Amino acid sequence: MSYSRNFWPCIFAAAFLLAGSTATNLALAHSVSAQIKEMDAKWVAAFKQRDFATIEALYAANGLLLPSNSPPIEGPKAIVAVWKSWSELPNVEVVFGPNRIEASTSGDMAYDYGWYTFAFDTDNGRVTDKGKYVVVWKKIGGTWKIKADIFNTNLPAK
Image (tube, rainbow, N blue to C red):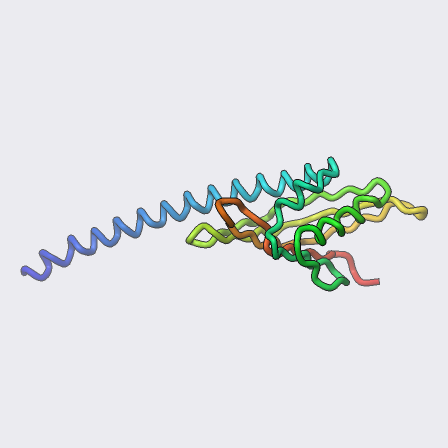
């Protein structure tokens, strides 16, 4: 009898703690998701304005850009040099948005997966690439930074 008297309060306490932990994790995930969405929007706005200092500041010191048909590009300055070169394409437009954002339970790592459109004009007409991306984020010194940025096309190979 004494065993069951001590057993059930322990079960209820464990369930209560687990429920609180789950609620905390959900709140953390929602908060991280909102922060990452804000950073994504900041990146798109910066590219539209050709504000490469803002884009550079979003990447970690050892961040990677992993575009298709290219070796890895490491470091914010090298990454920005690539984005600057692409910004010089006639009437270039880059837009993207997340389909899913997930955070680690510790709240210091996250990834977002989504879609992108990259378009520009040529002498033969408008070129439009549509694809998907994954960005890995790490909270460094209280600020979200891009650790790895990879994207590739949905278009068939020619």
